[in-house]
Amino acid sequence: MNVVWAIYIVGALLAVWRTDANWPTRIALAVLWPVGPVAFVVTVTILLGASLIAFPLVAGPIGLATAAALWWFLA
Image 1 (cartoon, one colour):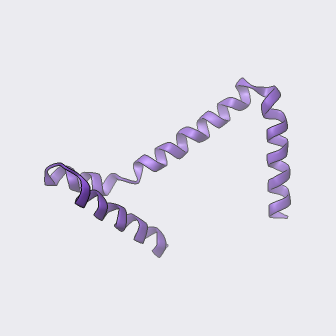
Image 2 (cartoon, helix red, strand yellow):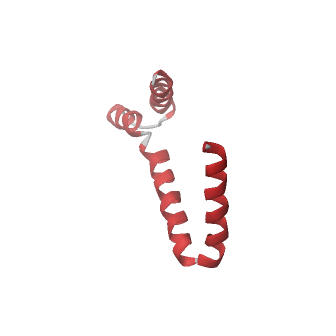
């Protein structure tokens, strides 16, 4: 958990230091900067889920290979 806080603090300090805006905007950006990477991960997850429905002939073998790889790594 300390690593997560360290990454957050470094990101917040970089946002305050490198942003060309007034101080209230800098503080808001420093507090909210993790929203961007989280939004990226959520978007990619949704697109991968939708691709399973849109392209079932491609997604079937990929899904089976992923399940087999997870089973092998976690067993």
